[in-house]
Structures are given as C-alpha cells and as structure tokens.
Length: 33
Image (cartoon, rainbow, N blue to C red; front, side, top):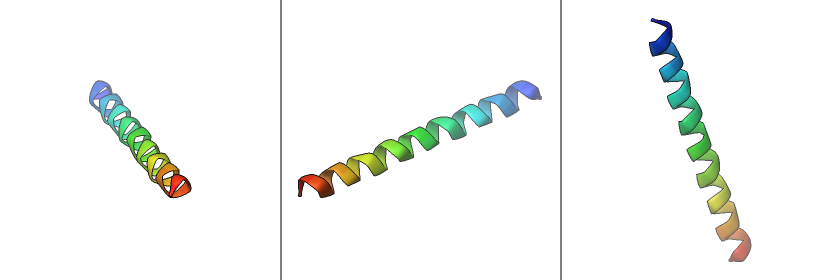
C-alpha cells in the first residue's frame, strides 16, 4: 500500500517538474520574441 502511494507521489512530482520546464520554455520563447 505504502509503495503504491509513494509511486503516485513520485509521478505527481515528475509531472510537476515537466510542467515547470514547459512554462519556463514558453517564457524564454516570449522573451526572445
């Protein structure tokens, strides 16, 4: 049970990092024009 919850938290964390990277990438594109 605990292992499954930990795995899901890990996935959410990784998804969150990907979202942050995507947002940063968009911001960089806007700055460069």
